[in-house]
Amino acid sequence: MVTSRPRTRMLALGAAALCASSLLVACGSSDKPVLTWYINPDGVETLTGLAERCSTDQYDIRTELLPTGATDQRIQLARRLAAEDDTTDLMNLDPVFVPEFANANWIARMPDDVAADLVDDDTLAGIAETVKWDDGVYAAPMWANTQLLWFRKSLAQQAGLDMSQPVTWDQVIDAASSVPGASVGVQANKYEAYVVWINALVQGAGGDIVSDTEAGTDAKVDIDSDAGRDAAAVIQKLASSPAAQSDLSVSNEGTSLPAMFSGPGEFMTNWTFVYKNYEPTPDNGITPEQYDDLGYAR
Image (cartoon, rainbow, N blue to C red; front, side):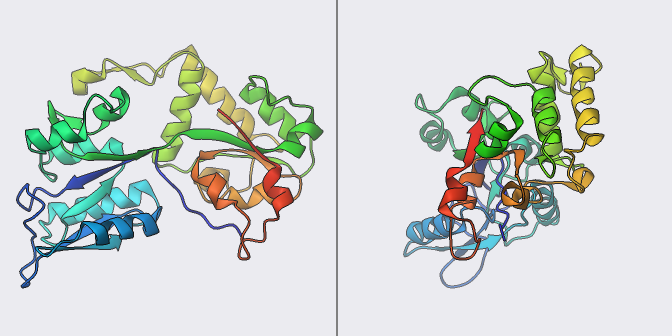
């Protein structure tokens, strides 16, 4: 059985505004202050080790797990912070939530000297922008991720699809449909990752969902366009094809994972955690030969 370990495109570490901006001040009242760090279920071993190494004689850092889905993570943190929960000190955030939390004054603005270390000339411009709000830095970039198209090499070969060349969604859907039992896995439940897929489809067709985003509520909505209609056509084609997985309308990062090594396999959009997830272990039953059959395209 393949287990799901979904990962967002990027994670940032924010400090709750309920505490003082210095991380040396905890919201607890024990003899030795304890900072609670809410972490994603992805990379738990690494993050727990980091919490242990960063604990000092002045304070300890303990970790608490968030739900697996980005939307559920946001809901839990938002409820805690809105209720002024004094045990929420540090948190991992999907970057799309940093502006919301900063605007609500739920996370602290980093002092200028700390911000200068967190976002410097070595930080990629796109990543640096995800932790900023209103000219301030509100989180520390932790790691970035990207969505890839994963596939079984043997499936692509059987379907006659050359994955060393650029391919279209029409080609991918047609290829999977031509092989009995093959499928296309996506994230199409009504949540954040579905928007990611739609955005990728629209941008791939040369358009944007919105433009002039710096205008805030006055931003221009552009999805009613040829690119938007092309994106919708891809979703419609997949939904009505033999390649559609049975749980398409509620699919997420984890639901399509088992299909990769079931029958002829699948083409699947997903994050880079997939590669480690499929690494053969005594528990997941994946063989080295199957692992070698795993391919990806950007």
